[in-house]
Length: 168
Image (cartoon, rainbow, N blue to C red):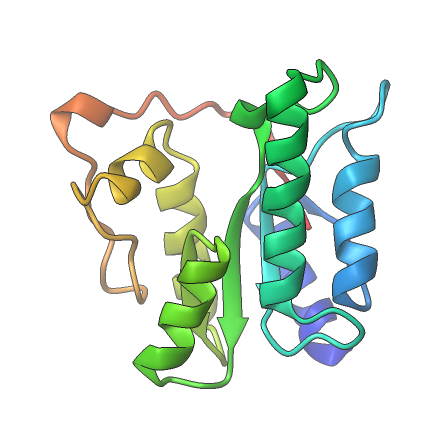
């Protein structure tokens, strides 16, 4: 609970709005609800791998599956191009944990505790249009820490919007 509030304050300080879900199932439900007409969808979900009820990997698989189902039917309420980026947070620094998270569909994984600078670097990186595609194609890796903030290749030149992002 304290970590959620601290992370929420970090996000606010960085100019983002956020919502907190107490477990993976509630997070998944919040993401689905955000695609109902009149609602504002989430751009990114910071997911704790060890959440109760539905852990972070299960929640990620559920989110990806939900978007895949809607993509097949081309639902106007949840187009696949608006699926949130998912960054996992884990206390386990083992590469096997990171691999499991990425296999579940997370875009990146951070080891807790995360500094303000690390969160800022992640948000800056993932806010760039084309970041997810560049990572998927192996053109660039997301920053693992504050000291790393790779630029995207010329094929993915950012035109970062100044609009506020909504994060879960």
